Length: 127
Image (cartoon, rainbow, N blue to C red; front, top):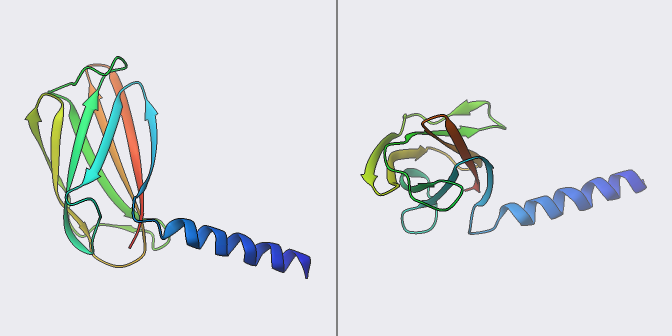
């Protein structure tokens, strides 16, 4: 019985954490990659993602190769469209459409490569 109560408590705690308006982010790699949705929040349908790529010292990096991969891990599928990333110069990039075609848990991985260095961030979003 205690195990079930512990499991129920954990599920409730995780559910409350997933309801946050701001997506959680996880960053990794030598490059600093940040991403945010146009208007602040992701929505069901087509979204625009604003991305910044910097080196370790914070200098903005134009000319990086940036990819955006939206996935629904609990459903085992990705987005219905592949986002196109445009380099806006001075380390700023825009990806669209970032299509989140249904409610649920999404992980949007943004990866950047510049010369031999790579960095990534993962937006954890629940719609």
